[in-house]
Length: 139
Image 1 (cartoon, rainbow, N blue to C red):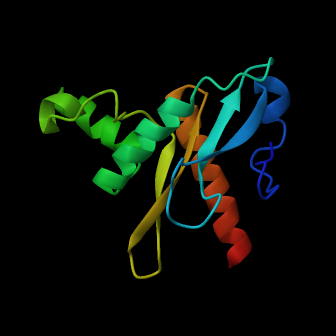
Image 2: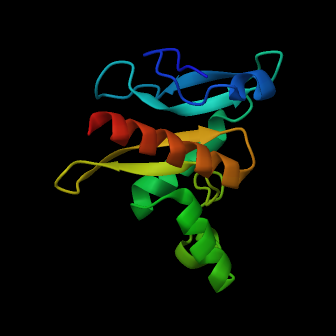
């Protein structure tokens, strides 16, 4: 699988089984031009069906400063939801796996990497594997 913008390899072999990938850009973002919000998997006909999931998961990570999967697991253990616990609208936040916070060396949260299109645990595991590979390559 490759992102459109940088061509970095994410998960070889997944594309053939699941479709292709697209990089998302946040409309009207004032930061770096073309900043990618995440990667979503598209079906065999090329229809992106998960762009809103990427947005909602990323919103959760930016608010909670931890992975969307960790947020969902914690809420599930409490028998609660983001809406019940914090009054957050479900149309804007999702506590499903697939989004991880990105931090500077000093710990500052500066973004998130988000994947959507697989079952939530698989989205989470895909992002974890990609980030682990990337960090190994940086070392």
